[in-house]
Picture (cartoon, helix red, strand yellow):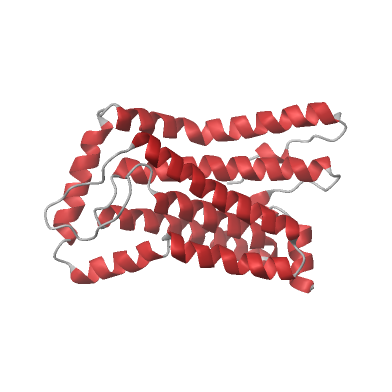
Length: 252
């Protein structure tokens, strides 16, 4: 479902008012998705009741996959598509293509969203300092701290941003399937991190909520920036974040 925040009219407002509205839009967008993240953060840092579910879920999944080599191989393959090195190419190649086609605003959007999200994930991991799950016969290993899941957060941000950039180039009848496929794949990446025993459930959920807040806030800011410059308002989940520039890039 398309969120309505970026489509609020700002026509006729003086620059100072539009700037204030921009800040309000970002704050509301982040609050809507970030509130659950705040709750999870409190649970993790205070060893709240939800952390007991974390441990039991990790152990339950581990016992069912530890000897299933086929399932483990599939989970590792899915997990790889959320790895930073893989996402670098997933985002980097479209960025190069857009740059060559003169779509500078979309390049900035992708770089700011993806690199900014990565920086936020790193900062929160360091601040929280949560150890990763410790299981007998570990299936996989991972470096760094556990909360939030970088794979979950980065995959939501990067694949979500790419979808919003290239949605105008997808035939209308295929746009909903494209959105559904993106959501399913991002969820599969998060599940793979649970299945491999390198993250707790709250890590994955925290990655989704924090990544969602960052992506929504970024889209809201980009949309108001468009309107400030006299561009028509858009509905990002229907027409992308900048349909005019994406269309020009495809036809260049």
